[in-house]
Image (tube, rainbow, N blue to C red):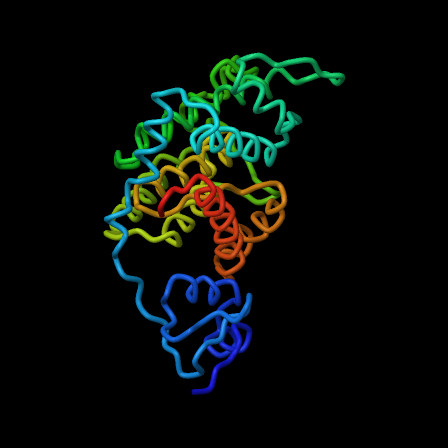
Length: 296
């Protein structure tokens, strides 16, 4: 039997090396084996269809998150997820709070001493984001609806300086046109229609995969339904839908930020950019789950 490398096999089937390594690790390439850190793949290997065997482990992580949330347990996966997801998602959007400051706010409900001035909105949006995570844990198995999406935006932006602006429309779709990264987004008058179409299309998929969830995220960000806060709401939706569908969730951190943006920009032409970024983030979260000895 002749074996080839992930790079050679990736070129052969026109997929990225990262995707092929993921297929090897998940058993979708029969006969592939590791030598040290290198995968050896049979030259005639065929990519097997993904088996729907997630049901037995589907709710393990979700149940643990719910249990630790209700216990207000510190030092577990719920605690770690709250801090990491909140810090990184806010950091992507320009928050100046550090990881330690985010942790301090979560653990003590106080800000602590800082040599630099701290933006009040950064503090409010951090505490609000903690509430958003509690909300998606509680609503993980609920069907994703416009109402849930709007509630996330309301929770995130309530009490901020934006919430005092009548045109900002906290918890409701945008009133004014906006753009993201210099790109045009959906006009306000079409947002409700486009969101209904997006949700209908998404819910027509019976067994949702991580690619389906990422595709929803891309289209959500293209619509950009709210005046601000779309990125954080979108990433909260990703986390919720991964939990709902028995998929290991992931957190886009600061190191992956630029790859994440590039992936969104190139999604319609080269899906592997964003897929690889999200799979890398998923691997990082899997490492955390392994540390806490949580099955997935």
